[in-house]
Length: 261
Length: 121
Image 1: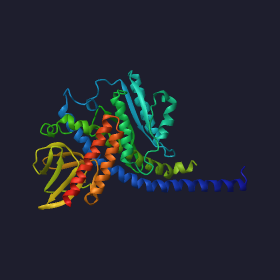
Image 2: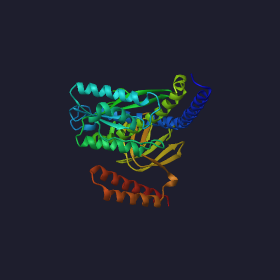
Image 3: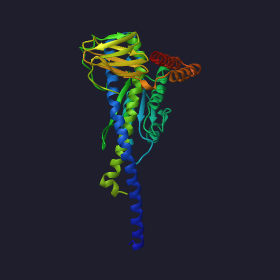
Image 4: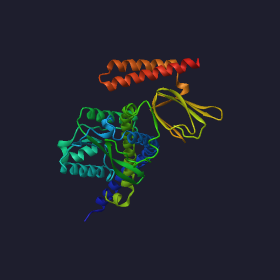
């Protein structure tokens, strides 16, 4: 039976824990607002660019000179999975759900006899997946976006991936990240980036034929594809960061979680 | 950056500047460093320096996906010189084709900035 003194100590301890979690919540709330605005304002640009690429992709379909980043290098043997998670925990299922998705994808690919490499962006995801897929890990990134994601950070990730592709280190590239839906919901999103696959669905096909291109399609694509890759990466990182803050707030706001302290 | 219904947009395409108005033939083009001019109501309503990017023109709209935009009042010969220096350093350090292309691109931006600043003087 706990003495009065023990109970007092317990009350004090719970109170101080609550102070910490409520402080975390407030910090996350202010970060959330900034991250959410950033993520949402990046969407139109990323979507327009993606639409432009799919227009060009449509115009070039079946063309022998099409760049490998668009149509692939003819094989799908080695798969690179870019896994975007947070550097820190205490945010509910945020990291775990991405890791689970990556694990599923990796298992599917391995079962189909393919080779899998996983590039972790964010420390938590790397730590979680190391146990089962340690042999498949390649160098990744962490500590991105300490003060909000900057484009050059996304470009750094993108350039590494593109350099690997140019070196024939992989054939297919996937990105798995949390997409921000609202402050309390995130959606794990899996997107095939190389060869290019549109995430917005097929665009209207009849408008494709009438476009003119200056200079020619392939030359634009040589510029546009790496650019698009960086932009989509930027977007994934921003979506992930906004989701992370949302998840952290939700984790510390839901009554069962607070009670579980 | 901005989205508005306007009369015409002048875009610095790789093969020369072009003005896009409604009913323009659909075009997709690379944009070279230069000034995007927005014309509305018979006068230039907005000018922006872009460092490059892509433009998509359809019958109904012009979309300029710029890499970066710089307000016109920040363009000066000094800024151009700084950019030029940065480009030359990058060119010296460049090892791969991609890095070399990037350095040349910075030099192109510097050139365009210089032209804009010189024209204003």
